[in-house]
Amino acid sequence: MKAWGADADLFARGIAERIDDPKLLAEAAEKPGTVIKRARGTAAEHLASADKSMKATPRKAEGRVIPAKPPAKPRPRSSRTALDLAEQKLDDYRRSLEARIAEVEEERARIGTQIAKVRKEGRELTDKFQATIDKACAKYEDALDQCAGRDDRV
Image (cartoon, rainbow, N blue to C red; front, side):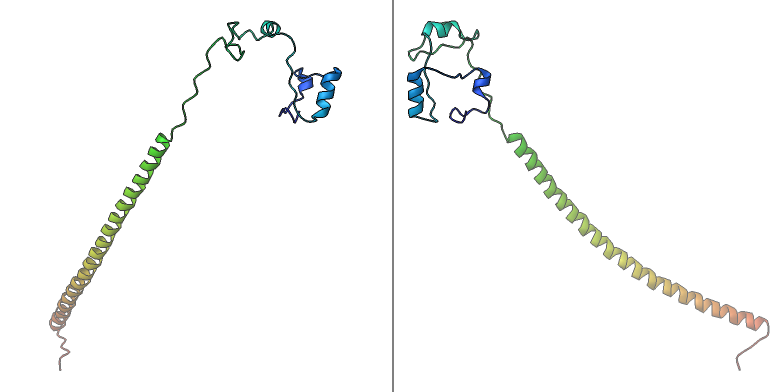
């Protein structure tokens, strides 16, 4: 089997058979492990037992029989075009996504700066309003004290 490169038992499948011919046995003994091919029978016998899918037509110069139907065309080679295009689209999308995220991050920083500015202005104005309220409250309490006849001023 090793000499034929077969992975199945050729004798069990009926493809090979044991020989008893002394001439063939002597030749095989001279070249152990070498495949010895011998045609058995005449060309007519071979044609008669040929597979039904083979058309019995005139032989070519080298003696082979022409098959009944032409061999199938080989399948076209696989193309990476669709895969390459999909990968390119993904790369393009990722780049545009990163650019958009960078824009939004810049906007977030700008808005953060605006928020800080508005908070500072709000604290300043709140402090001014509170100071105005404190003054008004003090005046009011003084006025109440004067109405009640209490004068803490000495």
